[in-house]
Every structure is written in C-alpha cells, then in structure tokens.
Amino acid sequence: MELGGVRSRSRQTLDNAEPARAAKNTVAAVPLPAVSSATDASSFEAHSSAQALPEDEVSRAVRAGAPSYFRTYEQVKTAMHALSADHPELVKVEDVGDSGEKRAGKADRDILALRLGSPRPGEPRKPTMFLIAGEHAREIANPEIALRWAQGLAAGYGKDARITAALDRCEVVIVPMVNPDGHAVVEEGLATGNRAKMMQRKNTQGPGGSGVDLNRNYPFHWGGPGASSDPRDETFRGPSAASEAETQAVVKLAQALKLDANDVFVSLHSYSELILYPWGDTREESPDHAHFVALGEAMASLTDEGGDRYAAIPAVDLYPTTGTSDDHIYATHGTAAVTLETGETFLQSDTEYQATWKEVAPTLDYALDLTGAPFAGAHGPMVRSTTVQAGKVEARVSDAYNGKQQVKAAEAVSDPTAPAGQGIPLAAQDGAFDSAQEVVTGDVTKLTGDKVYVRAQDSQGNWGPAGVAWRTA
Image (tube, rainbow, N blue to C red; front, side, top):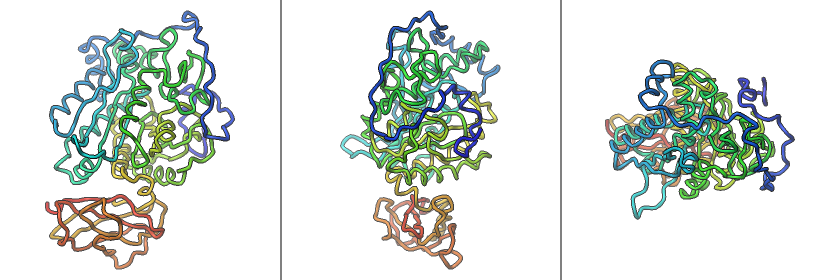
C-alpha cells in the first residue's frame, strides 16, 4: 500500500488504525470530547492481569523460542541498575512513576529512566536528548535498542572522543520501557506460546482491563483522528487526556527536564522503516516544517547500514493520529521531536533486530550530535569521520542529505560552542570546495585541549554539527 508515496508494509492493517478522517485545518487545541465511563466490562474479553510468570520460567521460554535479545521487565530493570553501578559518576537510575498496575496494587513495576551526563549540583542545565521506547508492548526490539545504546554511551565515555564530548556537553535521558505492564503480558505470551498475549499493544488499564493505547493518550489534540473511543479497539485513547499513569510519567518527566527548542526527543516504535515528524493529524505544516524535513532526511540517510534506507515523512502521511508523544512534546515544549518506526515486524527476530540496530544506532548518535541546536544544525553538512595525526586533522564532510548544497568552508576548533566561523580554516583536499562531499584537512597544532572539533558550512551558510577526535592517539 502506498501512503504519501511511502511503503507502509501494511502497518495500517496491523495496527487496526481507524480509517483516516478529514484532516483538521488548524493545529490549535481542540475541545476534549466526552467519553462514557459506563462501559460494560462483560461486553468484551478482558485481557490478562499481566502478572509476569516466575522469572526462571520466562527466561527458559526466552531461551527456547523468543528472540535471544528479548529481556523481561525484571531483566531490563536489573540491567539498568547494573549500568549505574558500573558507571556511578555518569549514569543514574531514576524512578519517574508507577505503572498502572502498581497504582492499582496488582503488581510492583516502576517506570524507570536512565540519566547520563546529568549536571552536577550547582551546574547549569545542559541541552537534553530525551529517548523513550516500549509504549507499545509488542514492539519488543525497541526497549533493547534504547538500553543497548545507553550501554554503548556509558562504555565509550572517556574512550571514544565523540561520546565523551557529547556527554560532557549534553544530558541523555532514556526511558527504555514506558509500558511495563503491557510488556509483562508479552512476556507471558512468549512463555506460553499465546500469540494474542505476544501481540499486546496497550497497557492493562481501562474498562475491564482492556488497555489504553498510550500513544493516543497524550494531552495535545487528544481525542481526534486516529484515536478510538471504543475500549475494545487497539487505538483506544483512554477516558481522558493523560489518564494513564505511564503517560503522566512521560509528561511530568518532560516538564521536569524543562525541554525546549535546543533539545531533541525521539520515540522508538515499530514498524515501517520510517522517520515521522509532526503533525500526526493534519497536513498543515508545522512552524518548523522545513527544519523537520532537513532533520528527517539527514537521519534517514544514516539508516542504510542495516540494508534498508528509511523514509522521512510527516506522521499524518502514514495515517492520522492524535494524542501522540512526539506531537505533544513538540507542541508543548518546542522540542525537535521525531518517531522512528523501526524494522519490518513487531516481534523482530534476532536477525532482524541486528539489522535494525545497525539502522537505528547511527540516527541516535546523530540526534545526540545535534542536541543543543537541532533545527539549525540539521541543515548543515555532516562530519562523517574525523582523524588527527601528527598535528594534522582530516575529516570527511557531506551535505548530500542536508540540502545537497556545495560544502563552502570547514574549520577546526577546540570549543564546539564557540561562534562558527572563528576557528582554524581547513582546506579541501582536492584543492577546491566545489562538491556536496569533501575531504578537508589542516594543521591544528595551535589548538588547545584534548579534542579537535571539525564543522563545515554549506553554500547557503548553514553550519552542521561538529565531528570530533582526540588530539593525540
């Protein structure tokens, strides 16, 4: 099926999305429609209470049939605390809220966030990259991708120049599993072979435990197209905006982080191999549409490594949605907010997961590089590689997916926050800046500090994010 010229991989059918309604002509807040609370719980089959099976039984089931990368809620929780214990000065685990079942006294699951590179007491706030995953429980690769990326950042700090520079400059906040109760249903499904439970999408609240689609429950434009008022539907929006404990946790965390236009928000979902940006409910362009196009195309250009290049489109071009996390974060905070629809299935196999990781990890790295000035930086050339040897820097820069402009200039600096255009000028290796892709070189012996940063400018005057290398091996 073609949606806006993009392969949909039949996701509209799989997600049971409601038929597209007419797009609204405005992005202003809409009145919240009334939803009846007098739903007869016996009118539909209630879902499992989502109490997880004993950990050893779930683990045996994972080894026997589930993808080997899959982790239960308890395993993810343990891994998060282990990461903090291994890197206590860099990584903190924060309890940002209770799950719906914990609030109801049925289970003991928390919504946990990893915070990497947080400012120390008395230090100013840093630009922030906020990453969430696992809103839809059956999209099992995404919590692991988020956690694996966090583990890579922690392991690389102090060793890898790019990671070290990024975490010195920015804070990274990751919620790998927004929907732990739904995840527990999937755990049980994998353990027992119950496919209906394996395909759990929603949380386990709502009338009769039918569940609420958390990614239709956020306050901005709640209750509009693509969000059902029927508790039996997969896209049930909940009884009111932000009615769910899990949604409230994300909303409150975003508020506490004081997100703004200098920050980046990424939500991981599956599937379609797409990068989605606002809006989800109208084809009216957002105020930052041109920036989102540049950001989306640049991120998409980095997904080739896994075998398939993602497409970047407004979310409404997939199908209309309202009450989503990315639209809410952008509309409320002005933050550059995108959704990555990873892979080609919900329950990704080990082979597909590894391909998905190769596709998604570079886009997350790039989003972190942009944090601090995402909308401006997305228009400028990327620095694909940077090396320093014997006082000479060499970098490969490209504007091929950031407007396809010629690279006009490049410079080396020791402080990436310094005003652009005041560093040491670098030369095109072939003698002329006349292409969208250039190798640039120059002497950097006069720079101070332990790192060399390289950034490039295109013919339209746009500077991209800096690449970085250690001054000495």
